[in-house]
Image (cartoon, rainbow, N blue to C red):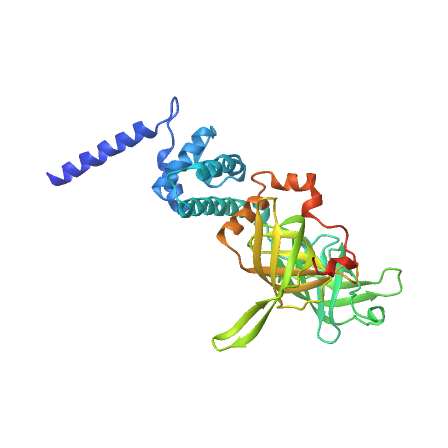
Length: 360
């Protein structure tokens, strides 16, 4: 009798759920919605909350809230406002819920086709693609793709060191690296087939390769910005318990030109080195201040010799600050539009000698 008793309980429960979560005129896809929500790591309480948001926003396909960037962007703003206003949730619960929603938005972004279209060989390269060319004898140089021929790649003669025009590249085996926007970094090995040095713009013909190694796949979404930042160099001094960090009281001014929750690119004239740690202090809006600890992972040149680009990875960032950066990146509250309207507070002018001066 017990198996029949349990079976009846299950049937009654299913009927109850169908009646409770059925929509008017069209049944709510409760099974698909709840099963997908559980796969994404949400609790039943959180899924019920998302269900209300999906219904309030009249989503034709409610479960698409778990994978559609369009539907998520439509729902996130009212959802976050409702979470923040909910008196039954404590601050930790609110933070956890908003974090999950933003992770869902990030996952949906990376599921877009443009992030999945990897390339297999160099025939897929496009003119004007920037290349980093490394040679054991000559060193590391910059080049650009000029033309993609069926038999070979035409690139500009690598430059970046004194005397680059006089170098003989023909026959050299080179390692080439490039970053493909919205994709990843790629590297391959090639041979210089011909060098055209007598033209106004010196060129190299290099062999195609069908052995591209895909590296540094994008893990965060970056957006272009124009944000004023104050940074403080961090040094370490030995102590009994190991090294002790010391944050300089002398601040310097820079400008963040792109930003993600994992790092940023900053232009500044301060002479810093790779692996230098910095305390960064900047505002996304008048109310949202970000303080982060970062490390310089790469340095590149700009057209102004006095100014460099510092590629920085965040190594310490609070969960609230990370969420605020993601809200800014996905422009959930239209904050990037507000930044464009009022640049006087958030930006600095074109790079000048004053960019390295100490802030008062």
